[in-house]
Image 1 (cartoon, rainbow, N blue to C red):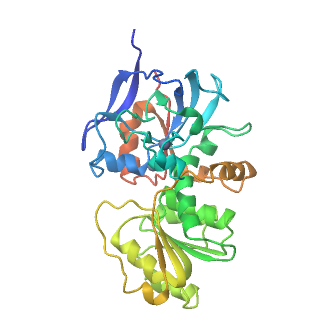
Image 2 (image 1 turned 60 degrees about the vertical axis):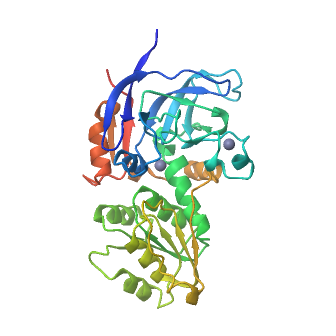
Amino acid sequence: MEKIMKALVYHGPHKLSLDDVPVPTIQAPEDVILKVTLATPCTSDVHIAEGHIPFVPYPIILGHEFCGEIVEMGSAVTGFKVGDRVHCLPGVICNQCAMCKIGYPSFCQNGGCYGNFEGLNGALAEYVRIPYAMNSMIHIPEGLVEEDVILLGDMLGTARFGVENAEVKKGDTVAVFGVGPVGLCACLLAKNVYEAKTVIAVDIVQDRLDAALKEGIVDYAFNPNDVDVVRKIKEITERRGVNAAIETAGVQSTINMAARSVGVGGIVSTISLFAKPLELPLDLMPNRNIQLKTGIQQCEGVDSMLEEIQAGRINTRFMLTHRSPLNDIMKAMDIFGGNKEGCIKYLITPYER
Ligand SMILES: [Zn+2]
Ligand SMILES: [Zn+2]
């Protein structure tokens, strides 16, 4: 008899519901079935729900940031066993296709992000199927729990990509425009791992700026509603501008501020996905030799960041502001998606019967 579970299903723009759906089963020898032990919605789940990402097929179960316990394994899976607790990267990596082979696993032709592509249901559910599981599951090391690593694959992975593209070095001054979860991770990495001297956070949500200051991962926090951010940054840097600007909000105003804040030879690194075309302030960029870098993370640096978590230099627990069982996922999507109640990340624990 088919087993049934609860899952957050996207049925098209503005149509989300917590449904009863079949529990996934092993379909290929490389598959693993995980019992989801902790998950968290991503801002991109909110964008999907609002209909901003039109290529996403439906019905589909959302969610690509998660940890789980292995309950079933295909015959080809080695190095793991039933009962193991793992964190999973946000997308499927086959390691066999042309994209995986040239170092772009996030564009895997046999994979993609969970909850974004046909046949790839996500993890805001009681169970999730992981294709090519050995390439994307990471054992949760002894001494760590789900809450320590839940942001590793997506938030920290994306932030690290932005910081690497920004070529942040010891002693640099870095401004981060948009300090939602990814932006906060970028501040944390720039300060604690890449040893930037000065990190400046910019956002219109004061709660996030306050969280960044309180956590000690930024030196300055500016709200464009209160101050002239570019002028403040010029003051701090004695008119030179910052070495790098990391842009995570994907709107015209943050792109403009980022381009204006960077000094000669600096880099604007954007890790946003843009819902519509924006103007690039090219009048500001060539005459100061500013580079612009864009892209999607390729799951690099996960092992080293896991070591930094174990060493205590990366600690994202201050972002885990909310927590509910899967039963309350609709409320969670509303609070997280609407930036309500100072929510930074909303953890989802297993469904309670
Ligand atoms: Zn995501
Ligand atoms: Zn591939």
